[in-house]
Length: 303
Image 1: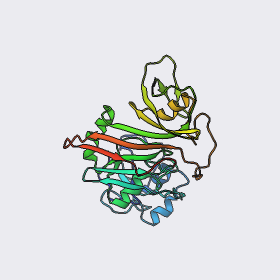
Image 2: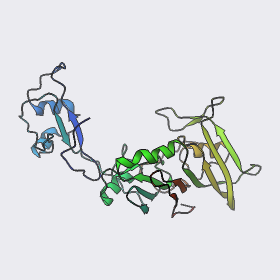
Image 3: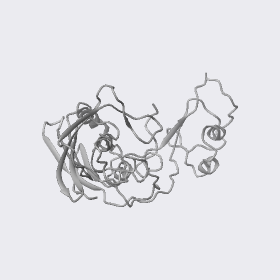
Image 4: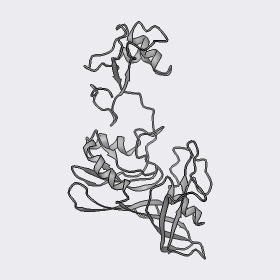
């Protein structure tokens, strides 16, 4: 691991770092200078010359890396990446609770939880690290980009383990609500139990027949609104796309689901049809002081 970064976070993101190879490692190319090594190490699309001229590469002591500095083995270099323009995600990011250890937010659909791929600035973590001045803020569980509702985050690294262990042990009660068609003859409430797997590079997860159960959801119908109903979903596990897959398997796919039953080709900046799935409630016993905590979303269906 590198030493502490000499650069402060920017836009809620820590600086990236590189390290030159150790002296005893063979070098495929002669790198007479640090500038030559940076050109070798970084993709061609990176304007290394321009960044060197702007003193955007720095050593551990904060001094700028220069084009003609002699190459040095086992040397750390930090810099901030250029970020692509992103379309602002509509909807308010509500902070529903904040204390010394926890931040609980109610996120809108289409806002990524963590910086990933084309969604960096438009993510909960990056926005709130900057807005709240919490450079170590990190999520304690997963929430799909297209899902709305409650997300818990730890304010500092030292608190993460205690809270994450609750999620890993199934000690956090999660309640979701979803809009979906009402299907005559569907006997509810029902507990759906099966094995869900998702292969890397595929959009959809799938149920694996005959495999050991790894996913379980209690499905209840709370109310009806014409041909659609408000369903209360209580997952007892947390597999990828579990609720969406279980509802689809019951013949009542969640309204405006872009993946189930079929993948729809949607532009990344098309926010017109949010998935009607809401992470509505979270309950837990705080591992640090033993207090009972319960949080509710400020949103309601339809989204």
